[in-house]
Image (cartoon, rainbow, N blue to C red):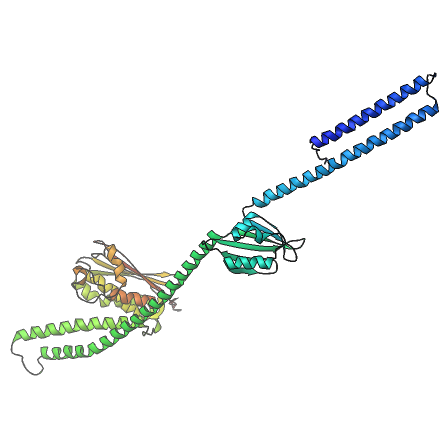
Length: 461
């Protein structure tokens, strides 16, 4: 690609001189030719005269070429210089308008060149960035003025993080060049450093909260164990004197050692016995829940017929349901054997039925249903009782949380649901409650267990 020649004043002057010389040469040749013709009578020049003219023309042409050469050399030199100046100006503009600092270093670690951004970001002056300055000395000054930390120090990449006195941060990235030496790039790292600090702060707070949570969990578990142990010992220590109270009350009520004398004392004795029995039942529930929560209850799985165990449980509550004017309906699959703890299963279902009898008005119905699932059995106990408000459903999983007077009028410590839930979870199952005020309550219990069918025997005549 040809380069355009810039015709400045100096170039025009030299071209003018060349034109004048060439014109003078032409006029000289023409004048010599006319003079030679005038000196001869012939119409044509003789060879001697012609050779003279050619010789003089050759000398004049050589002189003209010499002048042209003298004019062309400074023109080419000036063009080359202008090109170098233009390239230098372009490189200088690019170098000083980069958005990051850049410095070039030789193989010996001497500075070749750098831009103003490099000096500004490292807080260096012109004397610190003179060409030929040592990299080691320059970095000593940088480290003396700024805090620094080595992020990476590998063979091909070396990174330093600088912290300036004004709170800003810079990242120096040094990489080798293909033709020898290396390049230093410096970027503004303030926002990234702030984000990193915030992240580290959040991580420290998270670790701190995790430790606190772990400590609180340990304390809560210790408190729960202490509570369970206290309830177990309290229930055990109270049951013995309660048994004495109930036993002596029963003996007095039967007047084993003669008549009391006043019939009112018999009524009082019966009240003492009834209250003692209720209190004993409450402490028995507390002891049972403490055993469940403490993991002291050992399950004893055995093969039982589902229909028989549910029928037996329903029959046990038929009398109390009849006194309350209620009807118990049973729907369960026949010829099914479950492998589970019989006493725990009876206790779990009995607690739910007792609650249904307690809170279902006369004329209501209690339904006990069972279905087979892919991995066990599902029990459902539903009633047409007073129901439970949505805000109270979440409290039913917490033992000892007693509701309004409608739910505590029959006495007790409110452990029936909690015990049933603990038994279900101890067997790997779940307990869920769905209830609507004035409509009724449904309790569903999913119990994973081994299920087998009873083989039917066929008599062969």
